[in-house]
Length: 264
Image 1 (cartoon, rainbow, N blue to C red):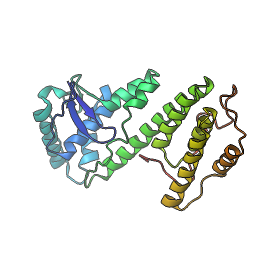
Image 2: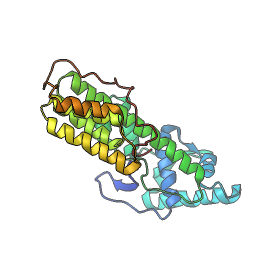
Image 3: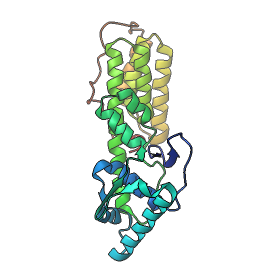
């Protein structure tokens, strides 16, 4: 069994976690990633060629694809890719963190899914003269980030509803890691920390977010951040109240206008 790690970068490892490879071609790594996300449906050879060799004519492009598949089979074994004719897919002898992530989401195993999200898809990965692949990769990066953010927000709100304010603050901190420029997320963490009795760190988090926006983008955060700072400094927050804090519900979190988070 071979496992692909494509969330946060690219790596190959055995089922025991031992590094495998590396592959001799960057496009061979791209092929594996595309097949991992294609799942059991697989991907046609024509689609792979269009994504990765758009500047080559048909004959040369398909020859290059055969070379990439040979490199994969040489390193990982002939059985790793299956399928005859137009469509190919990864065999059962190969799995990936991204497929595990998507399976965990489908099963509503949110904590496991968030733990599996190691960062943006193929972070730092680039294929020269393959603009369509770059667009494909950006679309998947955005989708996977959104799904992870949604899972984290659900976990944070579940903790809030159970008055587990320390847990809620940790989940909002994870959301802040995913999108460090999202003021509403920071405000939610500040409120959770304050409900847990940690007003000092709530204020520090707000001040750090303010500095980050000014230093990175020369913009001010949403007025909600300043309102929350004033409220906390005024001592108006009572720790561990029964009611949930007034704040946007899940799906209503809004990012700072014009500012993108990690993986965007």
